[in-house]
Image (cartoon, rainbow, N blue to C red; front, top):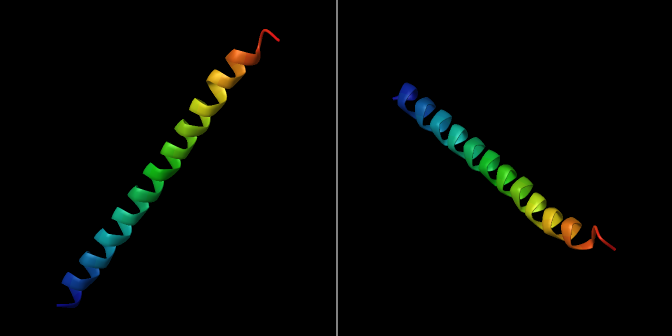
Length: 45
């Protein structure tokens, strides 16, 4: 029984890590999205 619970907790921890990484990637992408067009729009000024 202890092995099963350990596996479950490990899987949960891995899932949360994956979710955190995905969120970080989304933040980076969003940052680039916000930054890119703004820079291009104001580059000529």
